[in-house]
Amino acid sequence: MDALEALHNRVSVGGLTEPAPSRQQREAIFRAALRAADHGNLRPWRFLVVEGEARNRIGEIYLQASEADAPLSGPQRERTLAMPLRAPLILVAITRLQEHPKVPFEEQRMSTAGAVQAMLTAAFAEGVGAYWRTGALAENRVVANALGLAGNEEISGFIYMGTPKKPPRPAPELAVGDFFAEWTGD
Image 1 (cartoon, rainbow, N blue to C red):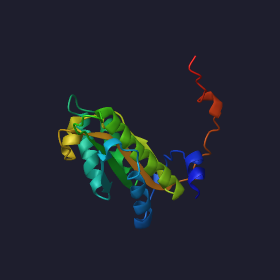
Image 2 (tube, helix red, strand yellow; image 1 turned 60 degrees about the vertical axis):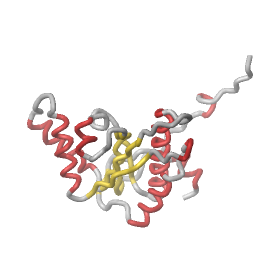
Image 3 (cartoon, rainbow, N blue to C red; image 1 turned 180 degrees about the horizontal axis):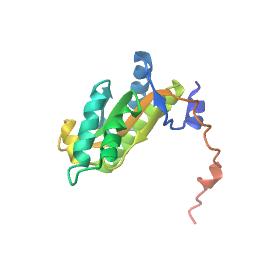
Image 4 (tube, rainbow, N blue to C red; image 1 turned 90 degrees about the vertical axis):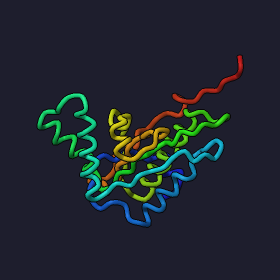
């Protein structure tokens, strides 16, 4: 697929099934992350690849984090345990925050976001379904600690990947003029 076609048409694909991306698809998708804008060449991102039985373990971690304050009901427990089973492959996007005189932490977070976006677009170009989830579990230190993150690292999200259960929906048509305007300095 042409690069502009992928950029113009990428959509998140939520309904995913086996198989996970092939070794060749993963290589293309993962390499795309390495081209993200990166002030200072800090490479503040890293990714954990979770698949197979490890998805059940991360479900247990989600449950432990969710029940840290109060137990969940039976259906809530089941739903939480099943969250990682929504896709055959999960990437945990991690930002490693580094003290730097010219690159604030927010720029480092944005760089990781750029790496994730590049992977989502590469996945779309490869015919792989993918979507990015954040939320309370991404911000939870119980999850971060259980995944082995250092004190200066934070989860930027979970990227779910697999084979789309149905063809991706068409990208919405947006008018460029609704988002771009000339500024004249007046």
